[in-house]
Length: 130
Picture 1 (spheres, one colour):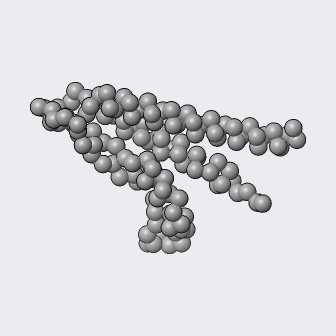
Picture 2 (picture 1 turned 180 degrees about the vertical axis):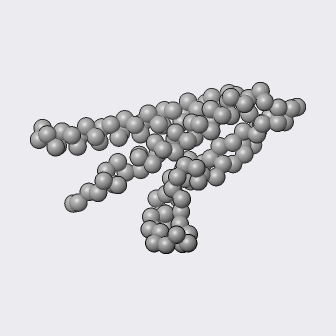
Picture 3 (picture 1 turned 90 degrees about the vertical axis):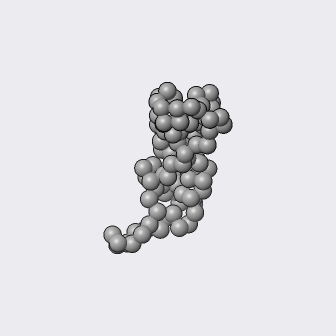
């Protein structure tokens, strides 16, 4: 079975990229917890990965005027988070929810990172003949 460089790490390579982007978004939310009128933002990580894994996401763009799926983290459409309780100053950030989401995202990032590190270690062992 032939393995290409693109498929060595599976979905974890893309997961690391998008988990990093999500960490930035959540950190921005937490940093603006006291900013009047700030609207908390986030994106659905599962739907982004599902979109990346659809066959249409892997179409090669053969001409610059052809439309294709942009796989970069900048292309993720951020949605506004619906607040659990109204704030008088219009801020929709709930610090406890943001911290919990950030911690969960960090754990998922570490899981993908450990998987990628394990894969690299196993490939290096195979190359060394161990």
